[in-house]
Length: 313
Image (cartoon, rainbow, N blue to C red; front, side, top):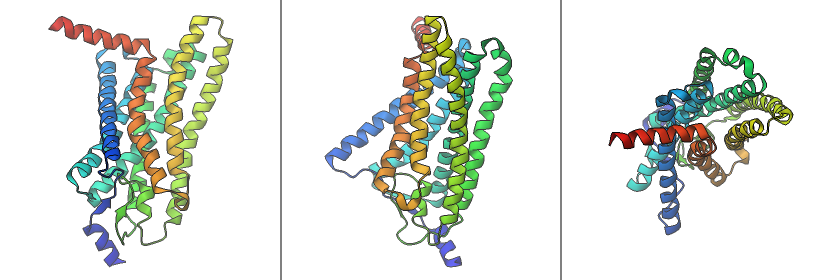
């Protein structure tokens, strides 16, 4: 066992990646880089707009800025390393690098789950209890929700990384993925990981299903309130805000449940890579587009900043 542990500590892992150098894959790689650029710029703009525009200093936009920040960190956790490996021809990643990727990826996944639940609760209070909104969603409560999401996500990341790196790894040390993902890493373990897989499943039930329950309960009340609304304009505005959020929730939770709530024996490396690519690259790009295109206040803030820039020239 000591020899295995020494082997684990002294060796790098090999990331097999997702692309080869065929024309089709070169095109797909270029597409991923394009999506990464849009996601990076889109989420950076969202964070800066919400920070700079005082009219967007409300609980809903504070939570949205945290979601954009998490998305920004998520794409920067995986894509730059994948790009470097692909362009340089090197496929290795150190144990420390692998551990960092796992910690950040799992932490951000968990944090986003709880943040989306907080955003659903915010919409529930805004639509079902508008007169009590300033009390039930005060700046203090909103900040507490945002900080709690980060803390719970980080705690989940610490548990997963501590257990995952305690296993001895041997054999080919080739990870069939474009980043260090726990399910892909477990296939290289020299020992049985069934107990850890069960622990991960329980963690996923808490981290995914508990927030989902909050989101469903919130939106059942919201939809009932929208149906009962007399004003057509109020109904349209409430539906536009909620539909944006529900689209984001559907993308996050669908992909996350597919990746983490299946046993290792049922996994296909190709399927996992495709879904992970969707989750880690495409969703962070769609999130700011969904919110900015369907939200007049964000569009107004953006035009206001552009207008200031023009006047300053």
